[in-house]
Image 1 (tube, rainbow, N blue to C red):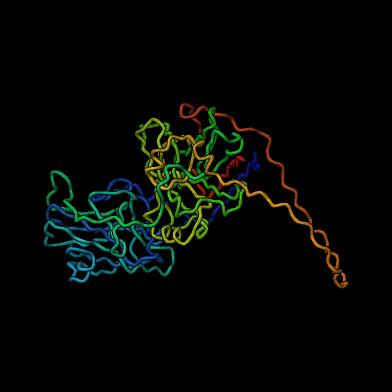
Image 2: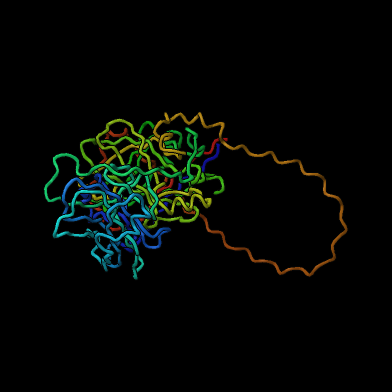
Length: 461
């Protein structure tokens, strides 16, 4: 057995602009033509594509159609909006004359609804609304709020390519509210294979199983987040009421005793999942956000994230799937050979009005969402998949060689001073019993910080 000493690293970030959750502006997080909790920002500035839009089918006369767009808190940046009547396919549609636009929205207010308003209502039908030409002199970003789910009211196209599990936050205002669904039938779009994942139903051999760890090894505190240990070895996570952008981070190099080359490849294992139990199913605290740390992008970066969607109504253990495969940059980097090196969890996108608590049993990487949801937690099934060390060949005797000519003696190097590490505190964390135990603390967190909460993973031989 090998185990590293527990490390807790806290990095305070002075600039509020480093936060990407925009929690203070998320009170009204729903449009009326998308599902709830469309709270993942897509940053179009500098993206690997030029256009992003939704095909929609309206069921009555409309007076307004638009998207809700962040500008990363600074009200700087431009986006162009165009609306077409849908005609057979993307290429044919965008070559036709637009119904409205293209219209440039310059330096629009953060989280504004960029929309077309019609004095003469637009008749029911199938339309395509598109964002393009992202510009931002400040460089912070412009984009659109999204939700990584398949939603029957929209079909999202990225440079004309259908993205199966994605919808954008948008408003469609009707002259007369429909009695049933707000949307009609959409054209059929085929899902394109993105080249990620595989057929294995088992997770990668490197995983986080909390009950197998030394309980003292994975405790610590972060920006509004406190982690403690339950009696059964699972991890108890508390997010205090009023905490803004609560986060905790994991960097594999600080957790595992292995070379980074052994980390999971994003192309083979693109799905991150964790087994979670929420403590208060009566309070819906909304989704969180996972920033992806890979060999190309090794820190929390705007637009390089995926949503964490909890089922707050479920009092039992649930598998929460974090799926970044609708993220264009992640897909590109994965296909280019990126590997996982960590992640940052923003436990909640909003600011909770009460303490929010949940337990975590394990975190693992999967080849598909289906595999993650079907996994029964028996990690012994993947033991045989672990790579074994190649035996080192016995070295052969080195033949005697002729002595090399004598060289001038190099100057003696002075010994570098060795910094001794400070002693770790000897106190052990108090054990908790899980969701039944209430942990005190409801103070608001005033300082925006990026906290790295580092665990130690045992690597079994």
